[in-house]
Length: 120
Length: 108
Image 1 (cartoon, each protein chain N blue to C red):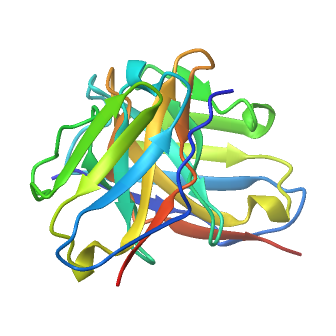
Image 2: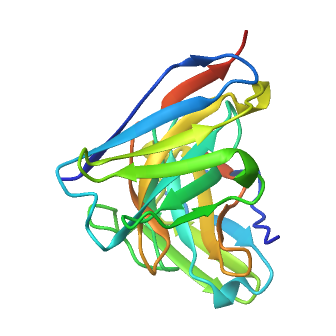
Image 3: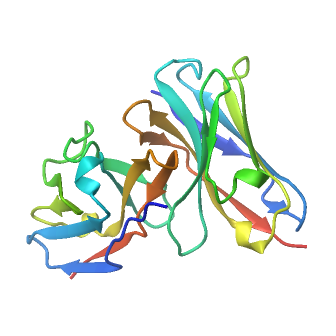
């Protein structure tokens, strides 16, 4: 079955760029039936959608983060990535990658999540 | 922007029925999805498209959606159902996913 795994630095300095990668196993990221998304959750708080990408490279971003977010896909590696620039302590959170079913817009598979702390 | 409102907490005794609401402007016109999240774990989809269940989710979990309120109903609540529950929709007017603030279900 399809599994998602996040990877990347657990500590990022303020004003720098947070970079995470999600590796898809057990299936192809090039399947036309899904978007590939990033979602985050600060400690003790709710879920916040960051954005998504389709295998073609088409993206949608949360308007509140759009100016700082870039999501990209590497189909040859079966991976997609998140870059969040100019980070502050408010960006400290658990970051999840997830698979979103196209036309239905729900997330049927999630990664385990990775904690990213923004601190000097 | 579209807002989904959930009660912060719901408490229920074992064996009883829990109802968790998700309020939004004309939410009945949208497809609502529900996730269960236990401490330290990733969310798990428990209901999609208002009332459908993914494979492996017990029939005790059901959903409904009408007017300005969607509801997740958990029948015959068990201790293992204690978790945070989130509703979610796609807001086509702003092209973004929206989550509710989450509801902590406590099994007394």
